[in-house]
Length: 332
Ligand code: G3I
Image 1 (cartoon, helix red, strand yellow):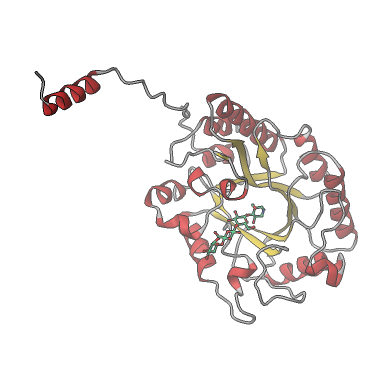
Image 2 (cartoon, rainbow, N blue to C red; image 1 turned 60 degrees about the horizontal axis):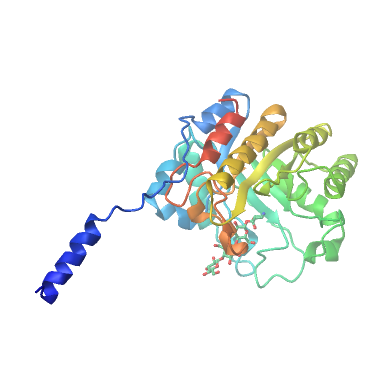
């Protein structure tokens, strides 16, 4: 008769011998493209990725981020915002922003300042309109972030409610005075396809130009949902550049409802390709910035419950099919 210990041994032997269900790996990138080198080879200034200071403690992350053949530009996601740089009135803390500015400099990467005037992430002490611009050298600044409602009207915030639309010109003039060589941008979302908000943004640009207010570009954030890149994106970019300004894709990601299936990852690859090829086809679309490159540090899951997998690298820094979509979009 089998004793209990023998029974247990037999059970574990049988369990070990049982064929295991094969774990099917998700589809991965096969491209060996150097994305920034590729972007520059077709006349773009850069392909880049946003980054945040806590990301930089991860050595696997930094090894990818620091390679300027992959990323030739960066935008700090949070550390140059007002609540980070003037947490108490009159007390300025530029250290975290400087870490990213210095890293970009040592990596040979262009820097996009982000952002000067935005209704979010204002410090607690802030109660009245007051404008602030750093003097750090950089390629470009998102001087005004998200000024419009989706219906094309100006958003109600402390700036607009105090100064009316004049706050935008005041901010742009202040930015030009503080950083004469930087390209000055207005940055927004839901202006990627033609429609009332895009038209309102073009009207704003035209109005600023007619007043002699410096405006060099419009940033298209491009926080997209899988399968929903708006129709007419490229034509819209062309309509903006016809105003005599440049455009940039400033915060690209393509989110999905989890779990990420092979089909969703394939659609995401196509979406990235559509976005990149639109910028590639428009001479004055100067470059593309991912809103961070890895799902490990994406803002999406914290904001949209049940959604994520929005970036071209997964949470383990494995390149997804979306990477190949980017390379294809740049003509690889
Ligand atoms: O720094 C604090 C930390 O001290 C605290 O413990 C923690 C607790 O929640 O919060 C931390 O602050 C968070 C900050 O990110 C830094 O991680 C804020 O709560 C959080 O709201 C903030 O989110 C940022 C968001 O802007 C603010 O609305 C995202 O990281 C950032 O990716 C996102 O970026 C924006 C662009 O600036 C403009 N366009 C849209 C885009 C996505 O919302």
